[in-house]
Image 1 (cartoon, rainbow, N blue to C red):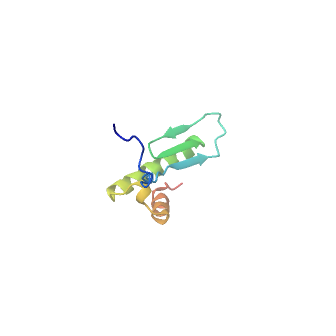
Image 2: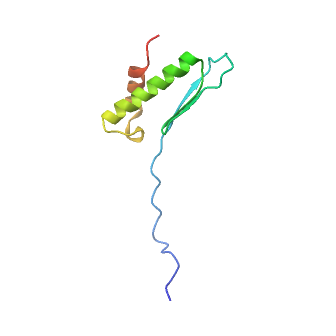
Image 3: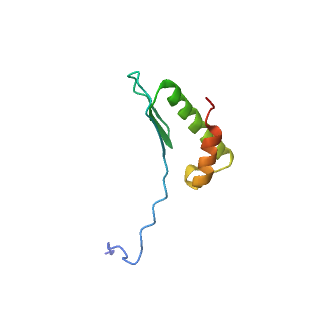
Length: 91
């Protein structure tokens, strides 16, 4: 007969860090509900222009991370902030 009890000295592996960016637009007044979702980001609300700019910004930011061989979880806050600022379209 085999012992079905677990060894209590073993610890469960720590879960991997998970990250997700959220863009929230507050200037929508035309009654449309805009939602864009991707694996690592979600964008909610905003006017058509604001929503489009946030989507473009995050898509380009993830392209830059990918070209550097990094995931969102591997990027520092400073690096992420720099990429978002770089990829934000001008008005």
